[in-house]
Image (cartoon, rainbow, N blue to C red; front, side, top):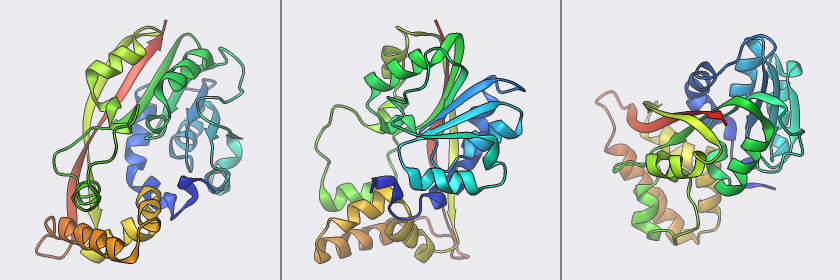
Length: 252
């Protein structure tokens, strides 16, 4: 079982679906366009592009998510492939466009960029979204407060939000790299709904909580509760902004 099959990823996908629409709009996607959606999850970008006439292949490492995608309206118009986004096994230079909505940012970047370059035709277009690190992040700050800073690793998803690193990674194989900033507002009906999202639905959070002892788990949930309460409105709803970027580039 992969991390992404834990909890209910579709709850995350519903929140970030507007960004998927933005990613597809930023790249060629018209009728007949051969488009691959890498780390496609439950298929937001794939299904949107297919609905616009593109010939879409959706790739994800988690079969459970692909099954959800395939069962959605329009799912039969997409070719779904269970594979690592950085080692798809798909033919060289077979796509006009490659996209990903908050997906490939979780994949080891050197292998991921090499696979993107391999899959795209010359002058093909890449478009993907990434989170940008924020000072106030109710989804992450409580984790640091309770568990401490994570051990530095070779890469992290929000590195794609650093323009210098984007160019360092993409420039050897891609031209016309552009980074457009945006903001997603996370909205919940109540503090309890927001807490339930991290305890029961968000795969990354559910996985983290699963490996904690009862006392530490309780402290972390209390920290999440406090963080969400800080963004509670007088009507009891919770809302906070998360910066993101949509990155586009052209295969050299």
